[in-house]
Image (cartoon, helix red, strand yellow):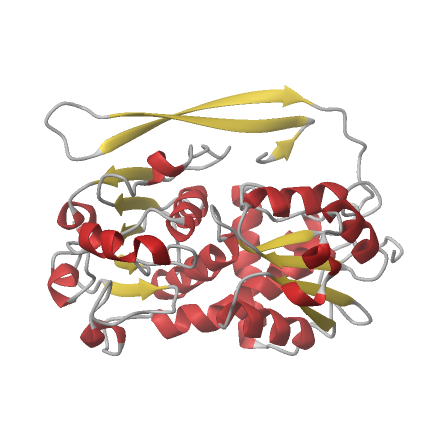
Length: 372
């Protein structure tokens, strides 16, 4: 579900076709509106900064329905830009906001993590809250307890739940029965928190995201999907180059988000994808769970290396991006990973700042309403 406005919920559908003698697949979107009856929210007073005012104006009343963040499609373009504005403010003054004072946030890790765990745990602390880190073997879920029961119990104790798991249906079921916001910290199909950090990094580099061109080369995985969804929503032009069998459209349909002004192109040739790109993005070739097909994947993705030669084929001044962990010598060269033509370590830091702005949006009650 995308933006809700004037009682309408929008759903996007994408079709793909391949013009003759063309390298690029063209995506055509169709949007269907479904009318909903929504209760009006309480009026909200002005906040202390322009970004805070924008965030405050976008709050959903917690007394009606929790605001989840499962794919990124839950945000409108206006919300996304306001969230990034707020993230920049929080980066400049990391301890300036205590939106989670007196609150606890459950962070469920069914998959290993470095950046996600540290950025969420430190971020919740900086917002004045208490992060409750729960590994898979520490929950009764590992012994067969229902996700529904887990959602009911967590909702009685914490103000939000972050989930890093595999199947998207696990996240969706937990959100279905949760009365507090649920945040996707990674699933098989989506990594929207990473995309927020990516957009924040690009925003710092170019001041605006409108019209910025970004190329992603390699496996059309969850990172590529979230970059495509939120990048086009922000008004960017995103090109994804992948070999046959690893493209975005082959793994799952891509929705068109209401209000998205950017474009998405699917290529086979990485050099065609990076033409005029202001940033070039890579990700690992063998993700968690892909170990059994590692050799096959490395062979198929070998032409999709992010190195100095590929950066030279992009726009002047283009820089490299990577969500980490990286494997220098495979999807990215060591010279690029540790050289001066990248903003990879900025991306890693920006996870914390973008996620803090997200939690503030999802968890903080609208100004003037009482606390839960």
